Length: 196
Ligand SMILES: [Zn+2]
Image 1 (cartoon, rainbow, N blue to C red):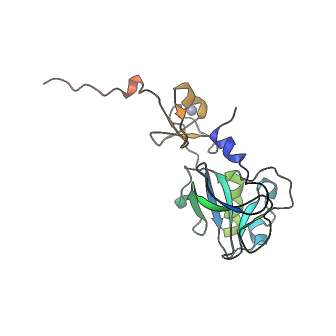
Image 2 (image 1 turned 60 degrees about the vertical axis):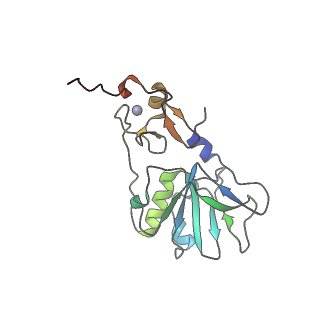
């Protein structure tokens, strides 16, 4: 079974050399401060969990793609890390590893991922910038239990839910990533106002 989240993690750039301007509706991009070196950014942290990132030589910035993370806002992040949801970006192709234009930087670890899971990346960026970044833990609005933030979905009401809870109530994921109910349930019926 796939989900928008697992599909987003499995994303790959176009093959070969070159660049393509791409809209990534199921991703967010986290950009590290330009004045942090690669050594400072990666340090001795859990590099194995980090996918390759894009380096932009002209500006010095480095950014990582993560699955769209609606529950993380700019306000959650250390001030020097920037977040963009559903970006349109000039994406280097898979073999674009050097040159003056944006290129991929791989670590000395083997990973099939081009998209980084959010939690290890926030840990790493938080440590590099000297700010611990707590990962929000939203509760499922349908069962009130904790969710794994990387696995919960957003309902059309804006609230988070477990995918299984949402599916059981008849919610369906839209291409936007938001889950909506096909028909209003009994609880959604407007209350009749008492006659005067
Ligand atoms: Zn639930």
